Structures are given as structure tokens and as C-alpha cells.
Length: 228
Image 1 (cartoon, rainbow, N blue to C red):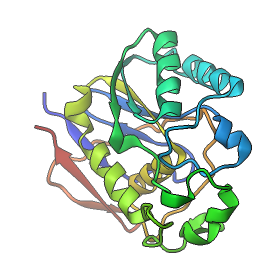
Image 2: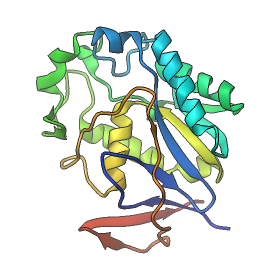
Image 3: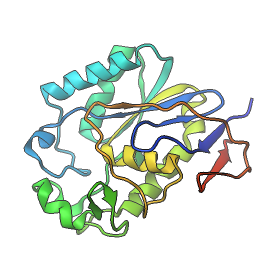
């Protein structure tokens, strides 16, 4: 049976599930880190690790997912996500299949390790929306670059997960980008909603789009990519 990785209209800012003809993908944000507590810009820094509260958040996330048929866990390769994925894997008795650089948080360049407040004018984000998708901290990624990286990975999920229900353990920026991608928003017009540490982010697939077809929902183009 063929499968398709799909792009679809969804409920922006609330939940997301990417679904194939044989499986679903659940997004989980890593648990609270020590840098979250200290209000430091994390980005792709290797240093942040989970707090006791972060461990508890991941344990709760595993309980949320316990009733699902999870067969694979894929994770960002950053330490705080690795730790979170391993907690989920042990609780669900599911191995972590891969630690994937494409699922990393947005790189914040020289801002990493500095107070998060110092990042505001260079982030390209204001009042819960992307203001400038091409602005970046020195040495860091733009929102557009993050969007392209994360959505390219999402479009490749079918061969990666082999049709199984899977969990992606990742970061707030990646989840926000995939929420925008799911509703048909590009990097220039996307929202930047809050995503809690340990959040489990699912959404029922409205329908499977036939590969090669193109429809419009609320003005947003939908497309699908055939898995090989």
C-alpha cells in the first residue's frame, strides 16, 4: 500500500499531527532545562540539561502517549532533547530510532548562553508573530532557514518511520514552524505561539491528499509528496 507525506490545513497554534496512510507523528517538546530556568538563549548550545521538573514533564508526556501505538521515537540530537527522548522511550518501551540534527532548535549563534531578553531585537519575532523571517542573530539561523530545514524533514518522514506511529522529540521553534506549515502558512506570515516544555502536540488528519493533487482550503495551498 502506498503512503504519502502530506501538507494540510489544521488548527493553527493548538495542535499538529502529520499522518501517512499507515501511521501518525506526535510532536513533543523537550522538558524544562536548566537554561530555561535561568532564562538563557539555548538555540543549538550543547550545554542545557533537564531539571527535575523537566524529567517529570517528560514522564507526564509519556503517560499521555501511553494509549497510542507508538513504534518509533526520533529525536533532536541536542542534549535536552536526547534526555527527554530516552525518558519517553523507557516509559513506552520503545527504542529511540535516531538522533536527528534536522530536529534541532533554531541556531541563535553568538546569542546562545546570553540572557534571552538580549535576543529580542534580533529574533525577527514580535508580539507572537514573525515580523522578519530573514533576520537572525549574528552567526545564527533566520526563521526562513529553520522553516526550510524542519519542513524538509517532515516531508521525508514516511521512509524514516516506515509507516509506524512515531514521536518526534524536538524544540519549540521546530514545533511552531510545523504548525505553520500544517495550516499552509509560510515563514513570513506565521504565528509564534507559546509551546510548553513537555507539551504533546497531536492533530487528527482531516484527509489524505492524493499525490500530485493540489487543493485550496481557506486560501492555503495543500500538497502531498509520494514516499519512495
